[in-house]
Image (tube, rainbow, N blue to C red; front, side):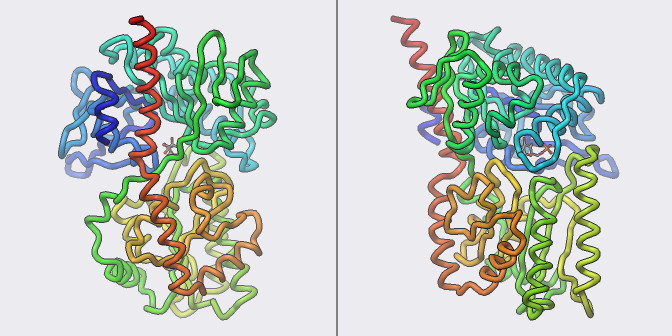
Length: 491
Ligand code: G6P
């Protein structure tokens, strides 16, 4: 943190993301309630912004926004300890429909995740996506106090933004982080606007991905579709006279997470959940926490539970799954279908294997706040992260952070970026139902000593590679480029 502060002295840090760090909702009775949005991005960047006291530009989306807007659409956050500025951009329904639901979440999201859900590419979505990126570029330029801000652009909603900013602030240090996977060139090539997207991203000074594999895929994609100079050794791409450094920066969580200070000791966390769901003390508890998204492999883990029950009926009545599935992007048919299929599957499975008040799977179709999530993770014997594909997956890391008792087993998809950092988990293939059922059995019967051994190593990794390291490394990349550029201009 200290390093960050000193290296960035004098630099203005501007973050751009689709999501706001705080959503202002209107409660019954007229009070305004603050809500942190689902997903890992805000959890990752809020601590950085508190440290750097910068400006965060995002799409305003809460139901109470009209009450909290000041004349400039600027607001000091967080409310309990104002330390940085939130500048909101208001999108029309049409903009939200085509830019957010359309091109971002019905096009780029399935394209990059390769979860065998067909991406839709629609010309109107694309036009609005471009126009919204342009609107954000205008706001960045408006907010920039000088010619050389450090701009941190987040995610696939803003692939065109780096170039748009570069054109107007040529000396800005632009660090773009792509929070989702990057597929290989063959797959990315199906996007009708592939060259435009790559060109947009290459306006960045640094292009960050979670893993070296995604960096390599990106570089190969550029090589395939653009006339550029690639230096593979230094992982740099020069296009149109400008160089972009392509670096792997695996994202992480705060250590220790702030929520932990509000948790009772682990046995009490466990008792609270067991009481709430009326579970017998010797019941084995498996948990999952995600947005209700088809990339998360939720139904696939339920299939593994069914397989376990078929092969080892002695587990019926001895284990339960608590699955939090927060409603997400519900206007999109692919999400509605995923939700329907999961709910139907759970109904059938519970009808077949449930008895006398025993319900094998509790599917909680609601959003949990951070404290509730940590409470659940502390109560579990086993945590299931079975994504079909996932940039990183922070729930895996949160589970590790939650387990101060060094107990608990993590089942982790080999297709989540986190698998590279947490090889001491039980690595599974979510497409292999039988293999996953075996892994489940292995997890349920793992000795406390083995759990401790594995958990200890995972905790060391997450403690070391925490969110400050992620942000620090990326910002240091940026700060060095900024200095280099400054020196070059002076000499
Ligand atoms: C993923 C994306 C984030 C996004 C989050 C929640 O983690 O990488 O950019 O904010 O999902 O999705 P939502 O569409 O609700 O913002």
